[in-house]
Structure formats: C-alpha cells, structure tokens
Length: 188
Image 1 (cartoon, rainbow, N blue to C red):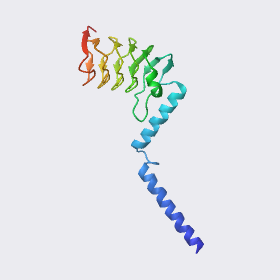
Image 2 (image 1 turned 180 degrees about the vertical axis):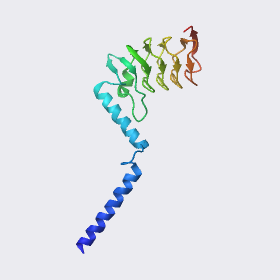
Image 3 (image 1 turned 30 degrees about the vertical axis):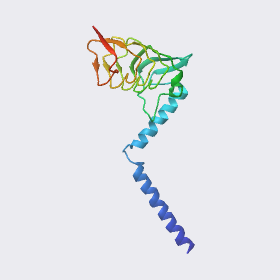
Image 4 (image 1 turned 180 degrees about the horizontal axis):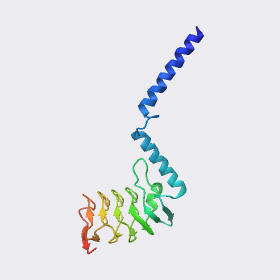
C-alpha cells in the first residue's frame, strides 16, 4: 500500500513539473516575456556591479557628474531593468557623454530631477525614447550635429528646458520635447 501511494505521489509530482515546464517555456526554444525580463534584470544587476552600461560603454558617478564613456551603444533600459545609477538619480546634476559612444540609451537618465546640464559628444548618432524623460531641472543641453534621430519622448517632462538646437535634417519622433521648447535648426 505504501509503495502504491509513493508511485501516485511521484506521478502527480511529475505531472506538475511537466505542466510548469510547459507554462514557463523551459526546455523549448521559445523565449517568454518573463524569461526575457529576468534576463534584463540580470543584465542590469551585472551592469551595476561592473560599471558597464553597454558593450564597450562604461559609467562613473562622482560629485554629481555622471560620465558615460567608451565606444559603442548604450544599453536601452526599461522599468524592469533600470539604469544602474537609477537609485542615485536625484544626485545627478550633470551628464557627460564622451568618447565614441554612438547612442544614448532608452530611459537612461529618466527622472534625474536634479540634472541641469547635459553635454553629448560629437559622434552620438541617436537618442533613444525617454532618455531624459522627467529631468525637470534640465536647462542646458548640447545636442551635437552628429545626432540624426531623436526618438519619442526623449526630453518629455523637461519643463525647465526652453530652447535646443539640432541639425536641420535630424529625424524627430512624436513628442520629443515639451511644447514650450523652442527648437532651432543648424545645417548639418
């Protein structure tokens, strides 16, 4: 009798395990949203411990200045996998993007409410969606003529920003800047 009960329990456990594998997509070639989110969170955690914010791109925060340097694209961050400096966002007053960084990542500086100055090096080609969303103190912004594409809401909520200059053929998605910002164009 005890053996028969053990067999039934093992069969039930096996059925539960098989159902769990089928629901989570483990063992198959499909990637689920939850496994992708877990992967992004793991990448964000790794970035926080090694100062990486993209392949070949690093960050350093000292005395309120966040410096992004290196070669290549910044990581696109999300709500589930925020920038590694997000916990210190209210301490960041200046952002310097230098070196041969080619993009500013999505939501990279979201809600850096003390941020007043952004300097982006010549060579950055595009600014991803929501990159500076909610930077309410931002008053000074240097967008080099190398930037050819600025994505949706990149500067949404930057209520202190009044004027920017971008290259004349820069592609702008919808709602890049608040309605109160005067956009000036320079030949690029």
